[in-house]
Image (cartoon, rainbow, N blue to C red; front, side):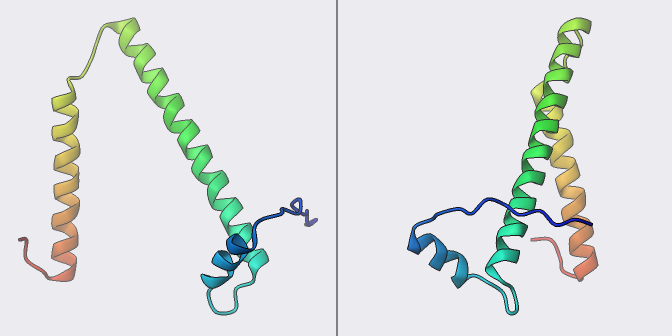
Length: 97
């Protein structure tokens, strides 16, 4: 596979120092920057997909006239969060507070 280079980026010394200060053992500044670029690109891709799904759902609701009340959505989300919390507590052997 061919390797490509990112453009050189000028930053203030304190930005470089901050990045170097959080490097893990054996990690280079180049690998840190590559990871940051990869993760940011992925996050933006996921955000764009999320927005596209939301806009499509909104359009579908307008088209069909079928809407789900916010309270119902929140209740379902709360139930999912609680189920996951209980599963994690069970896995760790801890009791719910």
